[in-house]
Length: 242
Ligand SMILES: Nc1ncnc2c1ncn2[C@@H]1O[C@H](COP(=O)(O)OP(=O)(O)O)[C@@H](O)[C@H]1O
Ligand SMILES: [Mg+2]
Image (cartoon, rainbow, N blue to C red):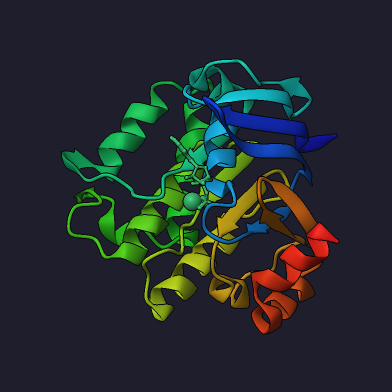
C-alpha cells in the first residue's frame, strides 16, 4: 500500500482552476520531489493535501489507504500527513523542549516518543537549540532543521515539505538537505517541493516529478534533475503541450 496516493486531483479557488487532474503515489519509506516553476500549483497541492479550507478539491487523496479529501486538518494529521511551513513562525517564551513536553502529553506511548526525541535530536543536530525559544534568533537553515525535527518526532506516515530550501544560502541548503536525509526512515514517505534544483545535489530522492499548470508533466529518477538544470522548465512545457 502506498503511504500517499493522489488520484485525479482538481483544485480551484472560486473560478480559478489551479490543480488539473494530478496523480501521484509515494510508497512508504520513499522520497519524491516535485519541481516546477512559480505559479504551477505546488503550494496549492500542499494546502489541499493538508486541508486548507479555501480550496475546492475533487478527486482522491489517500493516506495509508484512508481517504482524507474533505476531512478537516486535524483529522488528516491523525491519518498521518503533516506539513512543514514555508515560513516557520517564531514563538517567544516557548522552547523546543517545552513543545516536546506538550506533544508528549498527547502520545499513546510517551516512552517511545522520548526515545524518538533523543534519537532525532542527535540525527538532525538540534541539541544546541532545544532550550531556546522556538525559531527565535535562529538562522534560516537552523529554523528549517528545527521544523524537520518537529515533524520527525511526530512519526507521521507522510511529511510534506514545501520549499524548505527557499531563501537559504548554499551552505544552509546543504545543511537542510542533510537534515531531510536524516529524517528518512523505512516508514516515512516524504514529498519535497522545490522551485530550484540546488537542493537535489545533496539529496537522494527516489523519484522526481515536474509539475506545470497544475499537473505532473514528467516523472523520472534523480537524473531528471540534471536534465532540468540543462534545459530549464520551458523545454518541459513544450513536451507537455506536444
Ligand atoms: N488564494 C489564492 N487566490 C487566488 N489565486 C491563487 C491563490 N492561491 C494560489 N493562487 C494561484 O494559483 C496558482 C498556483 O499558485 P501556487 O500553488 O502558489 O504555485 P507555486 O507554489 O507552484 O508557486 C498561481 O497562479 C496563483 O496565483
Ligand atoms: Mg509555492
